[in-house]
Length: 135
Image 1 (cartoon, rainbow, N blue to C red):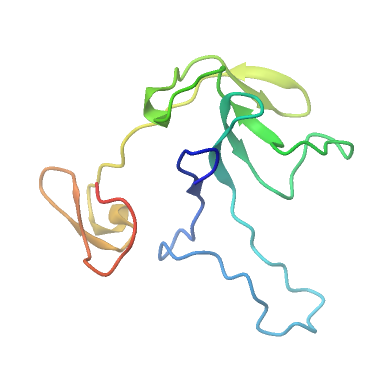
Image 2: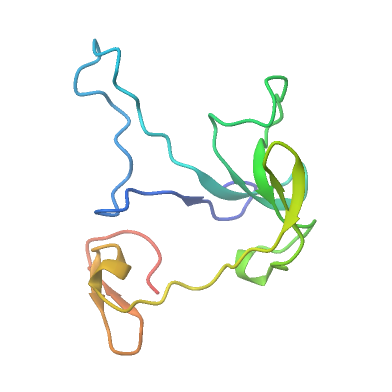
């Protein structure tokens, strides 16, 4: 949770696990720790944002919310209720774009992040020992 709203954190694509934040060999100068991107609400700008802690719009950006993509101002607690048009995206310059945010529907077990089985109705029957939202 951040600013009393859920935070959506990027996970590894092949098994749905969190990114490993430790190096198998701390002495290895070529090891690059994978840091996940996040979608979260930022109270300071009143918007939902996509951000990555290692990517900023400028070297001088010291904000608490270094967004790369942000919604229009909203007080919504549910990201699916946010207007999906007219988001701002930073690509060297700030431009306007539309986004598509939908519920996760499955076609096969991989769509359930390997944490359950895909049922015929397109919903995931999640494994009992997996924490998180059941959809």
